[in-house]
Length: 151
Picture 1 (cartoon, rainbow, N blue to C red):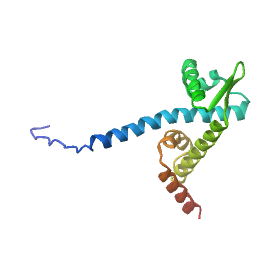
Picture 2: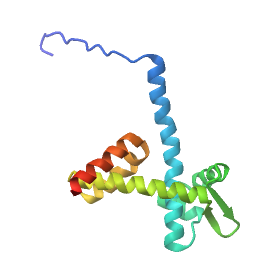
Picture 3: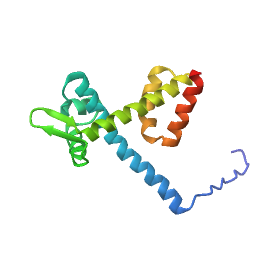
Picture 4: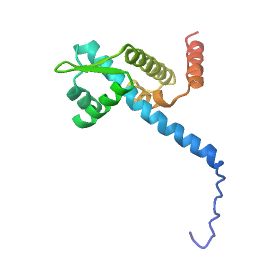
């Protein structure tokens, strides 16, 4: 640093409750995002191949078979999925509705990113994270933005 003193940057932290709430919101969103990814994939597999086996789900999500089984059990507890021996995983009506909602959010985020000039591959990949963490307020702004763009 050639003899000069470096000034310490003072960071003003938010109140503990405020910061804890923000981090809690992020943890909740991550937990929900996991379930959303599963219901969306299960819906896609059922529509594309007629079945959603835990092995296929795990491979497509890049997780172990055991992790897929554990998360599928959580989907069942949450009332989003059912399974039948030797027949794979199926979504309940609630699970199907959630998959449709997740798919619509994903499409909206991709469309906004494309409108901003982001290449298709990057838009699809980035939307996978954004779609789970964006608020309804921001989604409404995205819709308004696209309406203006299309006018």
